[in-house]
Length: 217
Image (cartoon, rainbow, N blue to C red; front, side):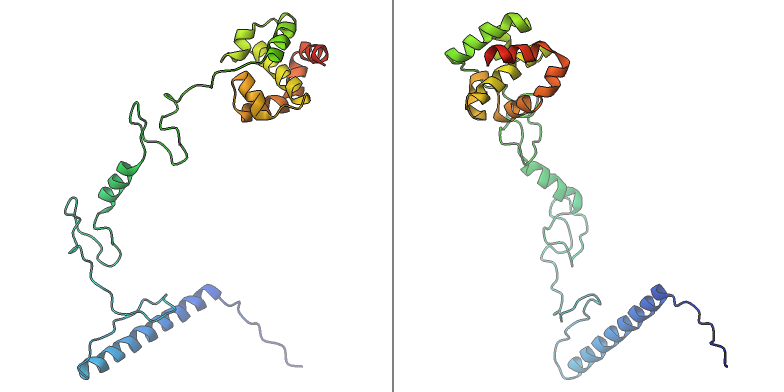
């Protein structure tokens, strides 16, 4: 029985590179031959296409900017540059188009719709508490050792946040929406949603939160 010869493992990368090199030479050679025939017949040449193009391309049009940047006069790539600006001038033009803070002129992100940066952004909206909220604050204020003005204001102390969470949960159980609760406490609906979701954390941190909820039930 004739033994099977041992075959060496094929280098796929080298094969692909060789095929690509042969394909490139064939494309360029055929393009040059075609252009020479067209010139012999008195016709304009089509031009050598790019080797990665899957469609036939026409002759590349020259840049209308004469190969120089309109801002600083630096040389440009006539094939690709369509703005007439070099990279430095193009980046400066794009930065100039960005929105800026109306107070300090700091560039703003595309998502910022307030017209001000984080440092000069308007604070939380003013609270408009109802009589029920005032009664709840008067009831749980001594239990949590907080003042109603602090709960309705911008304080972020732990006891104030606990009282704010208790009021938000109590109003939510009574059928109020997140926007309505935020209007009563002077907060956005996302902040109210976070307060209600973190109720177990506040109860674990301060057992008086559970007592305050029972008092408002």
